[in-house]
Amino acid sequence: MYAIVKTGGKQYKVAVGDVILIEKIDKPVGEKVELDQVLMVYGENGIQVGQPVIANAKVVGEIMDQVRGEKIRGFVYKRRKKYRKAWGHRQDYTQFKVQEIKAN
Image 1 (cartoon, rainbow, N blue to C red):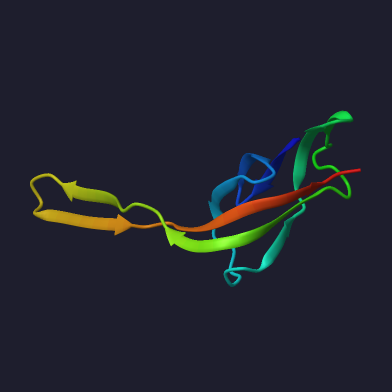
Image 2 (tube, rainbow, N blue to C red; image 1 turned 90 degrees about the horizontal axis):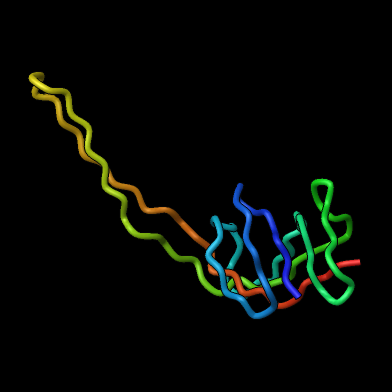
């Protein structure tokens, strides 16, 4: 059984036992979280597709860790003007372990 769930503006294909990196959820490590924007579920009953989400469907999991992604470097300059600016960015992620997929 697997599901397609939407969180943080992105869609993820998840199955029970998967560990995924999602956009940061501001909750402590070890807490249970329910993701309720389930777009599709494939299981014993066949395929259920939402319009756009499936009512009463949830993906339940646990927050394993709060991590940061790799550093992204950027550089801006204007030629012949002696203007240069360098910047960096590290995205915050939540490591999420899927424990259960609930569907109708």
